[in-house]
Structures are given as C-alpha cells and as structure tokens.
Image (cartoon, rainbow, N blue to C red):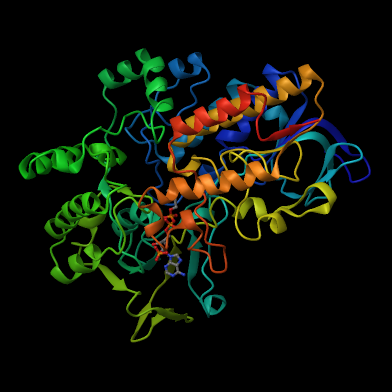
Amino acid sequence: MSTSSTPVNLDAVIIGAGFSGMYQLLSLRDKLGLSARVLEAAGGVGGTWYWNRYPGARCDSESHSYSYYFSKELLQEWNWTERYPQQPEIMRYLNHVADRFDLRRDIQLDTRVKSAHYEAQHNRWHVTTEAGEVFHCTYLITAVGCLSSANVPKIDGLNDYAGDWYHTGQWPHEGVDFSGKRVGVVGTGSTGIQAIPVIAAQSKHLTVFQRTANYSIPARNAPLTDEFKQYAKSHTDDIRHIMNSNTNAHPFYITDRSVFDVSNEERKQIMETAWKKGGLEFRAAFRDTLIDEKANKIVADFIREKISEIVKNPATAKLLGDIDHPFAAKRPPVDSQYFETYNLDHVDLVNIRETPIEKITATGIKTKNHDYPLDIIVFATGFDAMTGSLLKIDIQGRNGLALKEAWYAGPRNYLGLQVPGFPNMFTVTGPGSPSVLCNMPPAIEHHVDWITHCIKDMREKGIQRIEAQEKAADDWVLEVNHAANSTLLPSATHSWYLGANVPGKPRVFMPYAGGFAKYQKIVSDATSNGYVGFTLS
Ligand code: NA7
C-alpha cells in the first residue's frame, strides 16, 4: 500500500485480474522480469466471473477450449468436469492459476483505479486509485474485460420499489433465496436465457419481461466422459491449432458448405444433427449463415420451428418465435431447458415491446395495461459492453486528451491494441479486435503475447514509446466497419455489439468481424514489417 505522497514506481500497471490481467502479469513479471502490479476493484480474481454469479451462470464456450493454453503443465493438471464450465468451476480454475503461478503477491484487490494520466515529460503513466494511492509506470495495460460494466436500465420508480432487485452482473456473493417468491426477470439475452430456467425451478412464480425475442440453441451440457478428457489432454497442440486458425477461436471449424449446396432433406438432416449436438457449433453447420440473408432465413426458420414444437402454448410460442433479427447477428445464446421452461404453469411471458414497462412501483412492475406484483426483480439487461469499463476510468493521454473525448464518436484505435495519443497504453481484447466474437481465452492470449513481445522488443532496442498513428487508426476503423458490413451482424440494430443497448452510446460496430485467424495475420504482418502504423520513439 502507498499513500498519495509516496508513489509506487513500477514498469507496468495492469488494470483487472481476470483471464487477461493474470496472464499479462505472469508474462511481464516472469518472462520479461519487469516489475508489474495488477490493480483489481473486486475482492478476488476472476474478472467477469467474479461478478456474474447469477443462477445458471455458465460459459458458452466448451471447457477444454475455455482454458489457458500457454502452459502444457496447467493443461495436463486441470480437470474440467462438464462440457461447459459453470461459474464456480471457472472461479476455482482462475484461483488455481493465481496460486500455481504465484500471482497473488502482485495483485492488489479491492483497488479501483480512478485515473490514469500520461505525463509526457517523464514518459510515464500516473495512476491513482479511489483510495488515493499513486503508481508511476512506463506501460499501462487495460485488462478490464468486455462485459464488466453492468447496464441497469433507468426505469422510473426503481428507488421506490419495496422488494429486492439485482443485476445479474453484480450478483450478491451470498446468493438469493427465491423460494416462495414472485420473481420478475427483465431481459432475454444470453444471461436471461441461462438464468430463467434455474430461477423458475426455485421460485413460486416467474414473470419474464421480453423486449426482443431471441434465438437459442440447446447447450446439451453433460459431464465430460473419461474418453473426452483423455482426448482433450492428448490433443492440446491440435486443439490450439484449430482455435488459432479459425474465425471464432472455438475448437471447431465453420464448414465450407453453403446452405444451398445441399438438397432440402440433406439440409434438414444437417441442422437436426447440429441441433442434437448443440452449442455454438450450430452456427458452423454452413459457411453462409451469417453472410447471406436467404441462407440465414432458412436456418432461422428451422430454429423458429423448434421453438413452436417445444412451447405448448401457441401464443407464448408465437411471442418467443417472433424474432426481429437474423440468426447469430446478435450473440446467439445457448441454453439448458430455456424454451421448455415456458411450459411450466407458474411461468409467464410478457411482451414489453408491445406494452413497455411504464414504471416500477413499490410492489412490482407496471406496464401500460397491467400491474405485476413482484417480490424480486432480476435485471438481466446486459452491459455497457467493450467501452463502458474503460470510459469509467479518467484516462488522459498526451496533452490531457481524455479517452472519452478521443472516443466521443465511438472507439477509435489501431488493431484494437493502441489508441493514438495514448503512448505505451495497451488494451487487451477491447473494441477493434475480434474479442467478443471469439472464444475469449485464445483472443486474450494472442493480445497478451503481442503486448509482451512488443515491450520486450522496445526494451531490447532502447525504444521509449510506442503509439498508434492517427491515419492507421482511421484506416483500422474503416476496416472494422468494412468487416462488419460484409456480414449480417450490423442488421441486428439493437445489439450491444453496436452499443445500441445503452441510451446515448454512439452506434458503432465495435468488435472486428473479419475473423480471428485473419486478424492475427494482419497484426503479425504489421509487427514483422517494423510495427507498421505505430510510431516508435
Ligand atoms: P444482452 O445480450 O445485452 O441482453 C440484455 C437483455 O436485456 C436483452 O434481452 C435486452 O433487450 C434486455 N434489455 C436491456 N435493457 C432493457 C430495458 N431497458 N428494458 C427491457 N429490456 C431490456 O446481455 P446478456 O447479459 O444477456 O449477455 C451479454 C453477453 O454475456 C452475451 O452476449 C455473452 O457474450 C455473455 P433488447 O434485446 O435490447 O431489446
């Protein structure tokens, strides 16, 4: 601990102790021998998984791929138990990593970074915390996560509500007792779709408030078999290769087959098989699902049909299947018994697109034509994604340029790694990189390895500063837009990929949609050609 009068001098400050921050610490400290410290607002490591401990919280990536691959020993010694890891298991894993690599001595918990200002005369970052501590460092690495800034909707009357309310991304550690309670869930994204079946099983009555109907694919979660565990451990190089050489960093390739290459019967069979297998791999059955509207409609109609087969009440089935965007243009959820939950007598679905929530009263939620008495309200309303957590920190670069100002029209950076005007600041899996369109750990490892390599290069060559060039950033923003516009992704106009879920946020497609393999090549070409687009001084 320091006080404001005694700054701590470090080579690097890393903000955040999730997957990114922990690996970045290990890389800078143990590979390069630098002094580095992680500053973390939470009371433990884990990042997004520390906060998102709502009922049913589970990763949609398969466990054997939702792992660090930098350490063969770690891969061999850790045993995942289920096809998709549940939040407590991910927390055990990340805590194991913190202990195994002796990271905790350089992770400072319960420490929220308030500001980070670049001081040109000293070529250093001046970082302050809410408690008044000061750190000086040469390199600032933001590892704040893409989905960490909870989006609690501003609905009139929330302060008057006499019951308990929670946002899924800020879930109480002691849990919530739903037994005998009338519960309302607002939001049917990935989180709501995971939480709704579990809350339904624990509560007396559940009302789901749906603004936008959503596709969902059955996860088909199950305990991992011994054969699969053996396969995963004996094929780590192959699995890593597959993840690094495809579009989404998952352990499978998108097939090279068009929806129109096959007969109707064969197509149906392919989709049935993919539906039975479950999970995000459903998206990989055809190469043109996310590119061609007609192809997408065929796949989307297949899912709509499934919804109407599963949900017994025709009015509810219609409402759930009335989806306004192409399949996978919003992040497609995977579920365990989501649509089936609406067959339970004590579960109701309310269409708040037709009859919006007017306000929250002391006793529950009021829509235009109905009062819903509720003991507990759960907001599964998502995040101020990708930029929210960064912009909450007062970050100022050269000449006092605030990041908020630099990004007033949306995130502008080069390769998703550096912002012009912010020397020696690196962003891990932020906007402008494939990040949230990927299985995150490979995307994180790629960024951390690049940053580590870059800092090593700088130190070996006596380079003091690296900074993205303005023109390179402008060109990259165009490239990010172009990549998105080559897909159907921007047509989901409400999506958080576009910032559309947060009122007033600029509508810019934030992640790079050109694919993980292509992105890595672009970054590697720029680097090996002398850091094209960066100014080194
Ligand atoms: P999402 O995907 O942003 O979903 C949020 C849901 O909450 C979605 O159904 C929204 O409806 C709904 N929402 C948001 N604000 C409101 C208001 N004001 N009133 C009513 N309904 C609202 O967040 P998740 O947490 O589910 O998932 C985030 C990511 O975590 C996910 O993609 C995975 O990568 C993991 P809308 O669609 O905006 O009409």
